[in-house]
Image 1 (cartoon, one colour):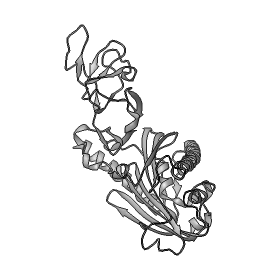
Image 2 (cartoon, helix red, strand yellow):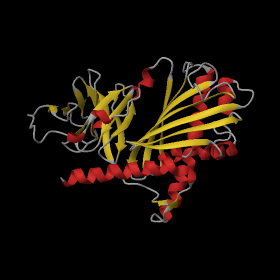
Image 3 (tube, one colour):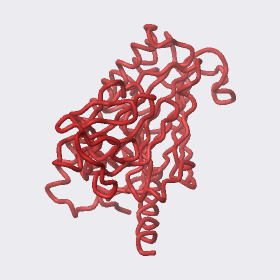
Image 4 (tube, rainbow, N blue to C red):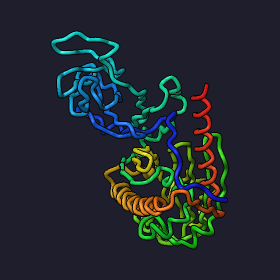
Length: 352
């Protein structure tokens, strides 16, 4: 079995455009799916996304300023509301059919700004990945973003096969490579992607886990991952002292539990924004356990970035050469199938 290295971009989908805290008084420019957007909050605090191009002379709206009911172009002062309608044309009349810019559907939920880049009429809010853990006091979260020069599916591949952890992240979240290779793994295809649950029983703790929980001996470790096509991966992982019943009850006191949200928002066909959040249960973000773990996470993800970008450079030399699969790649295969299903649906919708 083999796969093409990269996948086309799915347009009819919700993507993370920003973390909610990124939108303050200043508009920000962000490229998503080869389109230049400006993200901002109007005077009421409502988030919006427009094409980053004024309809007048093509100036980037991100060089302007947020105003009470929208955004004002910094070049000649035209202002637009969150729907792209011109609301002020200084010294002149507004021509509604001409003086407007493209607006994108936006939803703010659980500290995430989601944007829909496809056909606006198809923007179904029920398809947004729900992540209420961001609002749970037991799970204080850190938030991060990296830009990675590769097709976004390389990140999905990375997260759907964790055997790389022991080789790439040995000094942080990885641990013993042999323990990863013989882990008890159960993988299922879901309606929207893939899910796997992975157990590493009686295994040595990785350095990052020791820092958080002070493990002194072997641990029973789990990794529960759900991929929701096209770009989200929800992670619940943790560990307890070996033989203390982790497999029977992952919610019991003791040990450690972590949650991460991973999301790859395509920037272009071969670059993406890697949004990630991480929380350690019961530890405030300014605690040594939480802040130290997040530093290890960021370091580990930079290690992933190096490999993923190197993969893209190699693939670019021979883009049509296929990649092989192995037994650990079942979730990878399900994820790729989910992407192709979305692309096929998009093509059918466009043909109607």
